[in-house]
Image 1 (cartoon, rainbow, N blue to C red):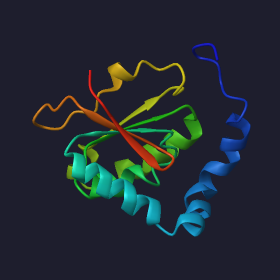
Image 2: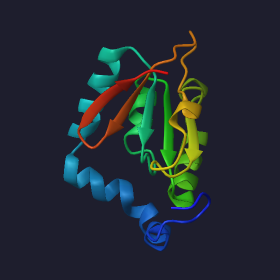
Image 3: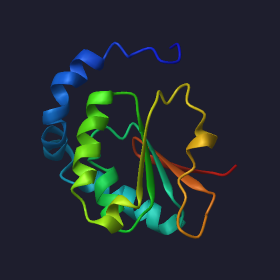
Image 4: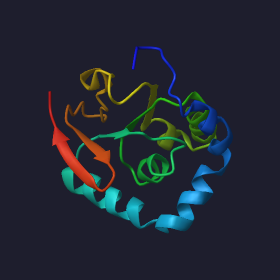
Length: 135
């Protein structure tokens, strides 16, 4: 995909963004969030969530004290995430960074999620696995 090009799924996300969280809550019942939260806490590192969407996983992790950077290509999904983050307490908002971009072409090294101590490692969360990367 060319930089700046929109996904063919964008028309879908324009409509689906408002229903996304509720739909997936019925599928996973929060079990995936518990898994990702436990993995992130065990690694003691900031998190980079690829495909963060509306923040269904990102926000509970930030509320749990995890510094997290979300990446997603859908402006509509990220608009919803940013609106939700703006209503969170200051300590949660400070843990969250969001970038619009395609996970296939974005320079991940430029998206380092950093904690207050300046940690440089991140955890990539995709599907059901976690891989630690460092630059």
